[in-house]
Image (cartoon, rainbow, N blue to C red):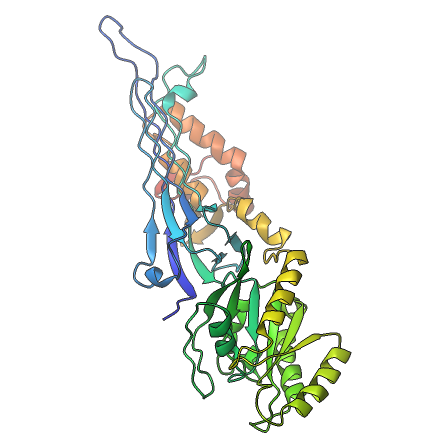
Length: 424
């Protein structure tokens, strides 16, 4: 089965903690601080691999976690940074943040990479906190946590040309005639249950990829039938070949069919509907179809479309159609699905969430990533480290926020898991 979407959890590695250490050497009574820095946590990196065709593997493994950085050591030894976790995906994969829907990466070319979750920074060792007045800093910084998020992967086929049209109009037969693709073909609706790709080679150095898109029905843009699952597979195509059955053997109006499919495209994606179209009037080999074709071609060409009479069953007209398509592909621009605004999401770091203060009975509770980090960075048994904690609380605005909430002398304040009595 063709898997075209997946939901997975990513957790980049945490940064290693800085070390609290002092130089110790024979005949040196009191050496200075020499605690090393923590190492960088591993990033989670996506890379496009030529050998990967589907997202099927992500059905079985949904959680990915990179290694943390190593803690710092003594003698100014920094911790080792963790290796990045590399995840292989097929070309055409779009990575979206589940919570916001933002596009984090649009991976289209083999070898292309994108950092989807950044590892945490290593914490600074106590060597960095020595000053003229603080010569024995007994504290260091903890590493920052790595990014974590749920992401949604979508695989959109990388094809130059998309074959669109109602079910049973001959798209699969055309693909089998113009390429080595072997789609399932039978005389009933919804034969094609997954997109088929075929490479068309007209001559040396002149080839392109065609996708046979499963048949649409009226209402597909609303999710009726196979609509949403397969309409998205034509979003990347540069040109659409609209296949229409002009034989009339099923009692259908080919002009009406043509207009219905285009209406579905407009409802689903106006940008997609604006793609150039070439019309393949199929089944012209069937008796009495000539008059139908003439009437159809006259109306469609009046709309500005190029119409080619073809017969997928007998290979009639396909060569002329393909060379016209090839000429059009040489002058059409590449399609881009990610806007500049979306691309900025990839490189914009998430702003640090401000702390929050709430009342829990008679206790003022300070919460948030910053509160957790400042507590872990403080040695409350060391006077200088405690002073550092107090200055950081005031500089961050926690003290002002507590006073606005009505904190009084002697009230209990809890920052993460550390409690203290408030003193003005």
